[in-house]
Length: 495
Image (cartoon, rainbow, N blue to C red; front, side, top):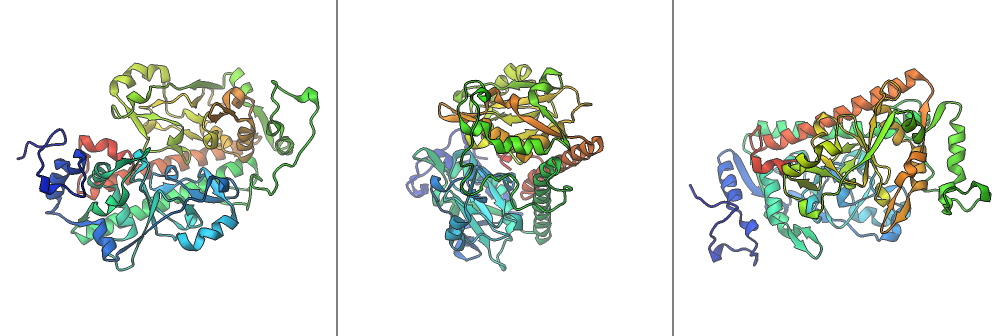
């Protein structure tokens, strides 16, 4: 048994590849693990599958920042892929005109895989495109894989292979810094995929991946409807989505309005803060909803707010405890691939201060396009620290306001419009600051309806968490294991 491991090893000069002199590229532990898998798996490189035309590969485009926010077509960036899916609310949208310019070239279809090639901690994040996601554009830092009908692997099986611990370790070993970000470059061709020799196991993995992906997407689409239902824009959570629910992309925007000097508040002279369309939309809800400012709920002790901590960049990557930042929230839940982790010692030092409990909510306070993004924590998410750019909201009187109902309300179009109106630039990023307390929640007047919305939100969120945990288990079963090795636990958090 060789004593060599990632802490130190010898390598003959003839073993160097592509003038790469970075030790982690030749990690002997990875080689040893692949040798162990030869007995039960067929080892095939991704590059070989591409050369044999089992997989077609393409890259996206950079459409330019001037195109951002011009329309509702999602422009998928590296941070919009996590947990085997695309965000329901990607940061950027583009116009139909821009989409048509790139649609034929990018040719995104249901069944394609998107794979993050550039971006440090995001590299290797993958998802399977479904019918609900096929009308998108994607950026150049993302690769698109299309699996042929007669290929050695299917799309769902390839997603599981790319998520297996041994492949995740290879990705980390092959990503190097290019300029200011990391990239795997063309070294994705070198990735060795552990394909189980047993055809029944392969079929079982494929079926389970499809079930997870389809289930999570179905639940994600349901989450998109729940806030519209809560606001009264659709009759129930299964109704069709309206063409446009918030007027965000109306041609020309708001061309102007007048306001009396006495209506100026807190010396704020930014027009959108007083957008009359927001007031009109709130006024229209008075018959069916109780319009309650967040500040009133705080005064009554129903809600409590707190902010996180800043641990400093030197603490990043020092241990296994997730340090949640604004970009780690997606589709009403925490990403299972938080960008940064910190040490046990740091967690013990701050855990009482941050005081995380199940059913606490996070709302993004700072971060331009992310401001107002929210999620709810489950029992699986409590062993974390979180950044100062997040608000933690705790419902102290759950008999008066269910936390899951609050989550739905925070995602209502009228609430999101208020968040946008109240976020201003501070230094180099936007923040909603303490103006979040001015936001008015449209709470449905009917007690039964409030209960239905809360139950539907709870069941949907928890179902998605359960499916996310199944995805992690599937990635282990690719290698025929049920528990990850200690060194693989952090890598598996990227699924």
